Image (cartoon, rainbow, N blue to C red; front, side, top):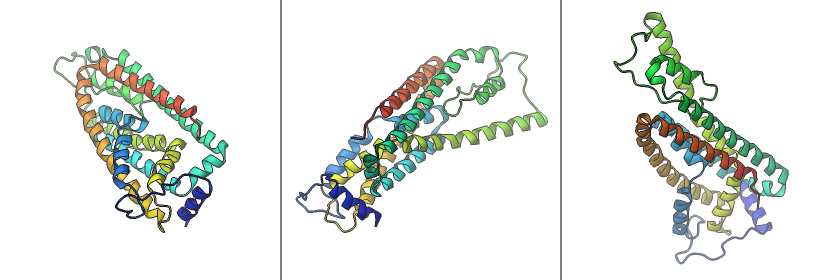
Length: 290
């Protein structure tokens, strides 16, 4: 089995294993299970690109899109855990060029996402007066035509009776075409959070090394089925991640209400998130495998 080979390679490579069993022994090859639970809960609460991305998507596009982004994070984390169990971490450490390529690609992608958020926030700031002088349709069309709207787009403007008399409302076939176009754009937008969250998760070689260095401390080296141990540890991690991301998603809905009433606050918050993503990209690009 690949996991057994990986386990033997870790042993031969000098990776430290906990030789001491807990007072109550080990179950399913896991030692000090409750210590692992506490450590996992603390680690999940640390802010990172995945959690901030999910919060941003939920605040901008709602609960459904937020959970699409969360599912992208879940899948990405699952893939990384499988790769870690299969011995990819040893490969990254043995061949630094592979680690360098992945980390630079991940850093560049995070920075690109951050710059896209900043550009969209700047457009939102400049267009904050659209509600007073333009139609709702014009505002929506502007947000949908933006080339970088895959992450953030201006808040939908609410139609009121104070709109100018010259506001045009599509009807008949034009209204049907407009509705279909908007629904198609919404469906496309709902797919992008999942894809982007997945890419953000996967393009992080440090995450693979972290999974190995953290998980392996709680796996009994003499256990005959280490894959089962990794499965249980991974399930615990995903459980806490699901709880945390769900809290962020519904918290993002509260922020959405605040941002709809305060467009400048929305633009400023989006700019801050963009700067964070650029910072995450720089941090990843300068990371080392050790």
